[in-house]
Image (cartoon, rainbow, N blue to C red):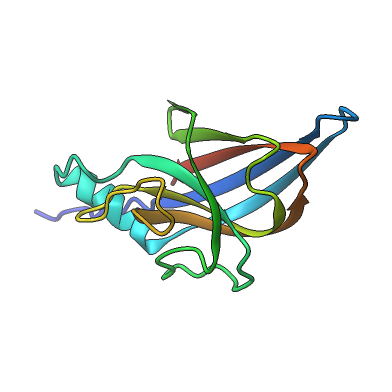
Length: 160
């Protein structure tokens, strides 16, 4: 008797949509970035599958000013500037979507990096910069002023 070996090749990919709305003029600017799902994000998925209820939940979005390119081995943002709890989250089949909203007084300046954070074994995400486990990171280059609100829409897709 022979066995047939089947292999599922699973990938995780992501996208960040940044929507700037100028509150004085009403002008909307929209930018789309692909992001890298990092090793620590994959570890958290495995931890959750093994039954660790603290791991696997993406809870915070962070923005930074660092210019180092994303790498799968990143453990955080280079220079974290602002962090906020994800206010809306949902999933449909294999796609997770998280939305974070920054007011005119938050996250102002030149933004060069963005990331998703959540819990991992021994790493609890909070409003404290650098806390938690990083899941995804992308390089950006946008400036947010006090006239802008900013909506971040992240999507993470499990693909085969």
